[in-house]
Structures are given as C-alpha cells and as structure tokens.
Amino acid sequence: MSNFENPNPMHDSLQTEQEGEPQQQIVEPRLTFIQRFQQKLAESRYFMLSCVIHTGIVIIMGSIVLYKAMVEPPDFVAEGGDGLISTAEDLSPPPESPADAVPTEQQVTPTPTINSPTIDVIQTTSAASTFKVAPQQVSVKINTNTSDLTKAAGNIAKMGGGLGGLPGAMKGRVGAGKAKAMADNKMKPAAEMAVLKGLAWLQKNQSPDGSWGDGNKGAMTGLALLCFLGHGETPESQQFGLTVNKAVEWILTNGATNEGRLSMRKSFDQPGVYEHAICTYALGEYYTMTQDVNVRELFKQAVGYIVQGQGPGGGWMYSYDKTADDLSVTGWQIQALKAAHLSKLGIYGVDEALDKAMTCLERLKGPKGGYGYRSPSDKYSLSGVGILCQLFWKGEKGVLKKGMEWVLDETEKDYPVKYLGPKADLYAWYYHTQACLMFGGSAWTKWNRWFQDEIVGAQAADGSWPPMASNSVGNLQTAATMSPNVYRTTLCILMLEVFYRYMPTNREG
Image (cartoon, rainbow, N blue to C red; front, side):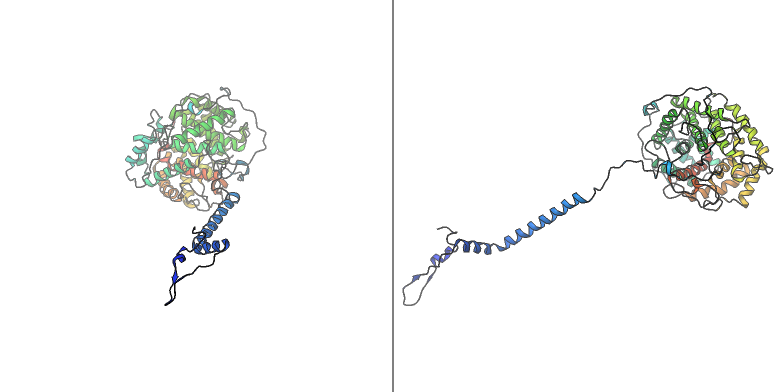
C-alpha cells in the first residue's frame, strides 16, 4: 500500500494489550482523497506560506519596475545645444554709449556698400586640416604657489610652442622676454595665476563651433582669441592649442562666408564696425605669431574694409558711413591697423590710414589734455583711447603728458579703480592700463598700484569676472548672460596681460 493510500503507516503495527485478554489489531477508518490532501497541506503549511510571501514580493517588485519604465523619464536626455544661455536674438541691447566697446543699438543710417580695395572674395571649405595641427590637448596643472617669476615664465613659454621672429613690441609674450617683462613691470604671481584661471574659464565656455558668446560673436571671439595670443598661446600649445585652433577656424569659415566682414554679417551696422575691427585685430596678431598662410588673404581683405571705411576727418563712424569721427569706434580700428602694420604684410594704405587717424585724435583733444567723443572735450571714459592710440603710433610722451596727468588726477579724485564701485568702467580701464604702461614712469607706478590687486581680487572662483554694480556703463559690464560674462572676463585678462603683451618700446614695430 502506498503512503498516499495510508497517510500514517506506523499505525499498521500499533497494538493495544490488555491483561488477560487476547490482543486485537486496531484498524483506523480509511480517509477520503480530499481529507488526505488537506492533511498534507497542513503538514507543509510553513513551506506554502513562504511560497506565497515570495510570490507576492516578486509581483510587487515587477510592478514597480514596469511603472518606472512606462512613467518616469530616463536619467539622461539627449539634447542639442552648446551650453550657452540664449541666442543672440533675445539679448537685451545696451544703451548707446561709448563706454561699452560693442554697443548693440542699431543705427538707421543706410549702409554703404564697401568693396575691399585690393582683395577678391575668398572661397574656402575651411577644413580643420588646413591649419597647423594642434597636438592632443592635455591638462596642465596650474601651480598657485608660484613665486619665482622667471621660472613661471619659462614654464609658460614651454606651453606656448616656442615662438620666434616676433616683432619687438610682442617679444614679451614668450621665453626670457616674458620673464623679464613680468619682473621689470612688477607683475605679481597672483596676477599671472588670475590670467591662467581666466583662460581656463574661456576654454571651458567656448562654443563647440569655436566661437564665444550668445551675441556679438565676432567681437567676443576676437576678444577671447586676443587673450590667448597675448599669453603666447598658438595652435601648438599644449594646454590651449585646440582652443586657439577652433577659434581661428570659426573666424576663417564665417569671415569667408561674409566676404571678409568679420562682424559675420553681410553688411556693416553700428555694432558691426566694432566687431569687425576687434576680430581683425585678433586675426592680425594670430598671423604675426604663426605666419599661418591660410588666414593671410582673409586678414588682408578685412583690413581693406577698415582702410576703405576711414572718413575724411581721419576717424571712423558707425556702418563706416564717414559722416563723423567717433572716437569709440576709431580706437578699435587703430588697434586693428597697428596689428596689420606689425604683420609686415605691406597691406595697401595701412600706414597712411594710421597717419591720418592721428589728425583725428588731435582734433578731438580737450582743453585739459583729455579726449572727446565726436568733438573736442575731456571725457574720462575715452581719454585713454586717445592717449594709447597715439602712443601706439609715433606719439610723443611730452605732448601727451598733460592728458596723462589729467586722467590720473580724475581717477584719484572721482573715478577710483574699484570693481564694484558706482563709477567702475572696464572699458576705460582697458585703455588706461595700456596707456599708463606705455607712458611709463610714475604714471605706470601709480596705476599699477591701483589696478593690479583690485582686478585680481574681483575674479570669481570659476575664473570669470562677475557683473559690476556701476550705474554709468551698459549691460555688457553689468548683465549676467554669456556675452557680458565673456566681455568682462576678456577685458580683465587683457588688462592683467599688459605686463608682457606689448612692450613700451618699439611702438612702431
């Protein structure tokens, strides 16, 4: 008999004995199938309970996973974009003011058609391989405890690719010339570290296409490129080579598309003349430092627009319309032409345009030696423009001493160099810093004492420079969007690079 037929076989041999009576076998009644099954279930109740619990857990967990897959989004969403805050179209324009280098208010003056006097339209595919090949970018640790300026400059020169053959005015950017310039002009290690941190911020915030900013990209990219070049960086630099290469490729591609207009538009408008000059300035420095033939024709064409756009009074105006001489516009054109002069390309009309521009500056000089906007006066925010541009091109210190003294007096009395002060103006300081170095002597000693620590101390932890609180400047200095961030950061870097970027001697080359 099987166990299933008799659920308890041990009872087959169970006997009960009573004294004096014969033994009898006790037979239990047979159980039905249902009763036997229920008895088995009762004997295995703990096992069944475990099965039920675990089955319930599996069902609950499976339901949770299915719900998440159907309802919740994935952790990472593939989105386009380059990390910039907004497009150029929704950037609020600043008020028209010479205090900002790149105003965005549009002029209604009809834009004339200007053709380059000597260069035809450029066609290019602008493949990255047409440039000097940048090595794989590596991370170079910044030693924030550097105290030996000579050693620091030597290390930086190794990062810069070993430039040679630079004109005298630019020899302070690399090697022994850099170390000497930093020491002679009393640059503190903290200032050089601030430059490196600022360059790292620019590198991090470069758009994938090689440009900078969410508006006025021609100007922002030109200013950023000037910062890297001012530090001696080229496409061959270890730390920043790829950054420089991408920026130049963007300028070449878009500049050729716009027939040499580096404002990156088909015609020149009010901000366009600023952008074109700034970007031309950067491209000229790049060519002088690298002799890269791929940019030569575009640079010559861009310079041609500036030469052609000069007005009869020697200055430049919005849209290159030649109706007046605007000193804010003129300052950037002169800097671009000086870069063209240093390139030694012999571009037609450059030196003659610079000579003619000096007559404009003299005409705008005020009674105290300062300079006016479009007529003679002493305007603090623009006087550095006039002094620097004259020192850049054959200007004599004796003739400019009165204006230099007025600027310093005004700074001490009414316009202190305080980054968060109510009268702070980076645009004015950008020019004043260079003018004081070029002038030298007590002018530089005093200005260096005012500006160096203040600008270094104002730098944000991420390497950029934050919005200012001034009530006398436009939103490029006070807003927190990307282009204003780039604008402030580049002007501050260029100010701190003044110790070695252009030498006070050899002003003509």
